[in-house]
Image (cartoon, rainbow, N blue to C red; front, side):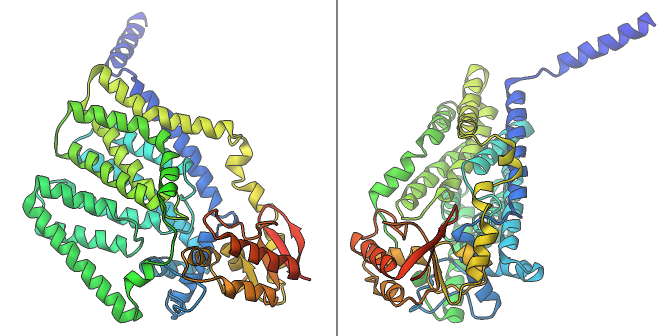
Length: 488
């Protein structure tokens, strides 16, 4: 018996020596647990009726596409669509089958997010990283996307397009790069651009990288991409009878101040990983190091540019998070000793700091996880019923509320505001409609800025709309979703 016990203890000690727990193991466990919590919350939130103007906006255009009307209103319409066409059909088909375009878009968004996280790990492994280092990359990105943004599981095409792009990247990472794979990868990159037009950082970074490491492959990839893009633009012109550039180039304020403001708010998230990337470039070379670093630079440049546009949010820097995730995996792979510990801290500390911010914001109570967006959804049912019962059209800043109330959307207020701010419209259409009490209900904000207009919106317009509302409407009730005005 004693001999048997001694043998068991010897094997246990040998097993312990064979596998020593490291700081990376601890980081993986912590990040995995946090990502799992965020994923559970995002999954529960899919079925929660919380308002998001973007989701309703997408749903209205998807419904028009599936009805055979096309997703693009006439140029004279006050409803505006500045997205390329494919997402409305890719979401529209499953949405038609289940009878809910918002839910279909949310499910596709969540599935695309999961695919992206898997693709990040597979790509890191293809770059030569170990399974642990690749897992660290995918988990840090997952934590950022789940906690720093509200995009996981919402009806928006961003993740769908990126999932397709990273699938294309997997075709390009490993050599030899044969012609068929290059052409297919170019086709997928262009396909993603016809889903979401801001996904330009990865195709450009890949083209530049291939030009350095594989000149022949770069020529095939770039030439194929240009041909597919020209074919897509031409087909769009034939089918829609409008220029794609005209569709995408809707009026929007751009300013250096907005870019500096938006980018400055991201500096605490970027600074340590960028320092880690600098250490990686100082100590290591290699084609994949250059790719991840180059992708980071391109993503930062485009992120800064896009953040200068009014209404742009965190999705325009997703490429930065993802590029930095790969830089983190490569740093752990190439660096040794103390420098590897420094690299681990450069990516782990910002992620934990972000979680600490959420905890400080009182978001770690059970209600946050089990009842997502509870404050916003408290009055949803009552407010949707109120809008649905309105005797006439409704003006709403949040088009999702309008969608759930089964009311037609006649104006995209945010886009209209941008047209006024850029001088493309003078605002009389909305002011006249309110003055003539054409709307039964206004679901907007409170006085003195009932439009909740952004600072760049001309004051004359905001004040004129406010006067028209005050003179012709009174407040029925207000809650977490909006202030509800009815005719006097």
